[in-house]
Image 1 (spheres, rainbow, N blue to C red):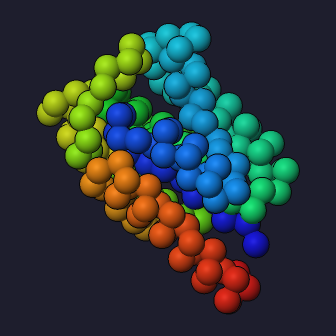
Image 2 (cartoon, one colour):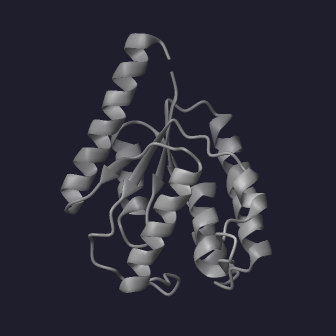
Length: 181
């Protein structure tokens, strides 16, 4: 049984660092966020077309990784986050959701939503600090609701976050082993 976990939440909440660590300690694969690579190599001008391209490339990379049949895949963001970025940067009167991004499926078995209760750290690509950070978290939560996804909250200090991730993953793997699904 394979478990696909996706990490959601605003910038600087530990998704990448903890995702890599937990994947390693749990014998899983880690899927980095393509949006970060894009920002570091191409830039942070996230136009609507750029965000759509980021979502498509991220999905292609995920499919390639899933084809290797890992027991556990921890994915640092997915189309849910890219759609939230679109809304945050390009909101329109109709609610701000992009039809192309909204049509792309969210496919993880388990979504972990990281709380913005950690210090924000500037790294040259992060954009939302202070009130904007909290506004972005609300946009992410709205995107989750619009897609009808359930999430588990990840909060607290770094060790508490790591332990909560491991507990959620272990519980889901145990349930899958017991039920066969």
